[in-house]
Length: 321
Image (cartoon, rainbow, N blue to C red; front, side, top):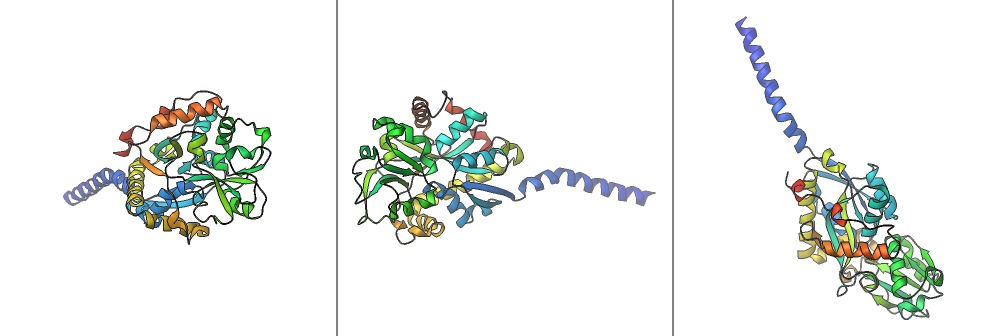
């Protein structure tokens, strides 16, 4: 009887230890995350995090999924097909108004006029020599810029019907230029760094900051609110990894650019000249600039109503749990 009692005590003690430790074991297990990105330089923090094993070091197993259409990417994120994503701010704001689903943004990428990440370019033979010359011409742009076209046209005194507008997948823009299928194109890095200036002219550097907003919030990196419930320590691990990626981009820009070049070999020989956005951590995000952009988009009719942009910024405490 005493022996049986001792066995029961040992079993109960083992069960108690298991009950106490199991939640901690579960919390410390690696998590599988899918990252929605595009082919522009704004995906660099995610690419560096993967290439330098920064996510793996923080117990995140990343899977990278490239999207051409940012609207589809954010829809898939809120449908649970993606966990984290890099999106144009206009996409984030439109989705919040249309669907009531607010991305929780923990990192921002600003485009600066002094360090042009984008530009309007044209073949040397094109009649487009200034931005206003796109009137009556075929003008192509990637999906990432679609929501900013109305703002630019308004600033140029043009209407949509004044220009032959065409949205082209990011990866096809330079081929369209080379084939002579357009009079001008709006490009974002890393499409600019390999541009042959003996064949093309820069019509307007930093067109987004010139015609849309200065400074221009170029991209938001974030997750759905449900992410916090699904992965209690997910935001903390994610922030540590992406902060480390940001630090590396700042300290070793040349190495970071080569990581970009590995993903997009068309700029392999010239990616050292690539211009990168200014990356801002959650506590450094220029929130007034985001609010100003939302107001511009409302005036241009891109957003149907005003939006309180403070909704998109999560409580900083979720990154410390």
